[in-house]
Image (cartoon, rainbow, N blue to C red):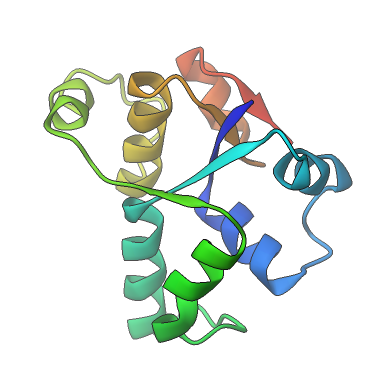
Length: 127
């Protein structure tokens, strides 16, 4: 069970937010789950914090520690991802989400997300 956490999923998980579904939390916490956090999500969080559009319970400087403490692996953007994104249909226009979609495809990961638009790309989404 290999999962990629959407940005909101990561934030809600770390914040203990009730907006996160019980099923999503159960999947992430399963003993056999291998959870990935994209560097794209970290970038998105940093940008939204700097714009004043996001507050998280964990200081940005502590995010790597929280990711590590929860057993999550950081997923870099590969050159292959950039090639695929240049060919990805525009069902979804958000650049961060488009990169997550591509990473889900290129790394064969199920995406844990509440976003219904991801299913238009034929990737496995769970919530």
